[in-house]
Image (tube, rainbow, N blue to C red; front, side, top):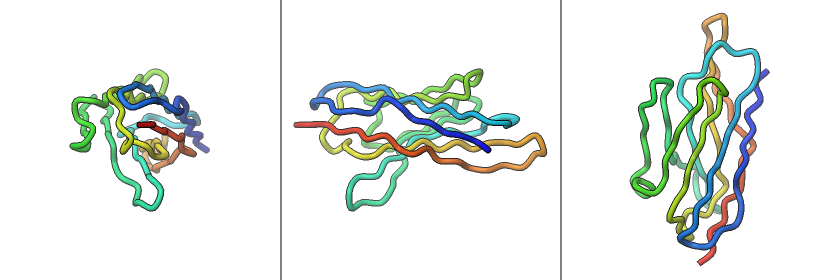
Length: 120
């Protein structure tokens, strides 16, 4: 069983910053890609940023230059530093991790989500 726990959401004014954290725990061999997604009310969940085990990063266009994804492989943790936040960044942010089992199989797990609210 794998647990994925996010933290760091909250309420911030436009132009402010927040840092999200997501830690995965369990009897896993390793973690491949880790990523952040978000879902605003009435909208579909969308990719925000991903990072591979080798450190390659991918961002959606609207957050490039403002958000930075990073990871600590020793802690099985991924971070999302969000700067210059805008009201349109308001959403529930979810973490997804791609785990590799000792058997060689893989599975994906989602966190429970953390609310980010940006006031204008």
